[in-house]
Image 1 (cartoon, rainbow, N blue to C red):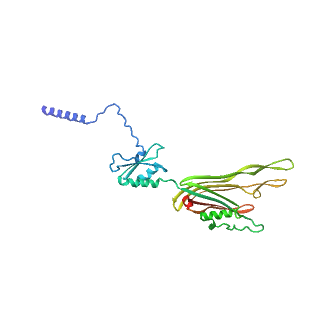
Image 2: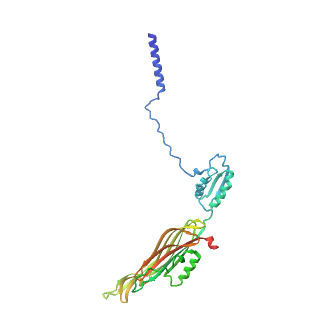
Length: 318
């Protein structure tokens, strides 16, 4: 019995020793904290040619002339997925595009770059601002304004419409006529402004107890400003984003009476403003009516229209 008890005690001690060895050590010493690693920063390395890729054995350097190297790389990378990879350089003044391509795709990559990296085309944009006047008939009911210029006269090939409007501007058919021409580069904004200062009666001062008044004259800037961005959709269509503002003075007799002097009423010319902002897709080489507004003033009715045309410079030379 004594021998069996000793064996039992020894076995228990052995199990306890094994248990102590297998359990993790618990100490009071602080454990070092695990520092979280930030996510990898997305840079141009995402389009860097993979080192050691034997398939992309052809190395090319393309000097971008007109476009953006980064934009070209972003366009070409999915197009040549698996056949070529592109990398731009961080220096802002460096316009090189580094290319790693398969020998079979290298020539196609260069041809595609030549098609995309081309000088922006020049687009000619014409803007006409027209006004037709229809005096009120005294002693008769007001009638709807007749179509002095209908849509057929204002739309069509730009050369024909331009010649027609130029001829009308030399007659009494138009109360107001202005033409602006802008030479735009594709997808770039261009602005033109034409203006002058004109005297305008803006108020009056009393000259004494007799009731005499003296008009106050100030210079008023009037004219036209047009800002246009032209984008070539294809050879047949041009997208225009434009803002047109035209300020001019009415005739004094059509203005506002602000006082009465010894020689009669003192009239201040009204400031007539035409303001238009919009987006249009126009057929290349054709005119369109961008705006048409009819007004009814004290002495006359009027219709103001803005006509716009756009065409490629190469088409104009033909």
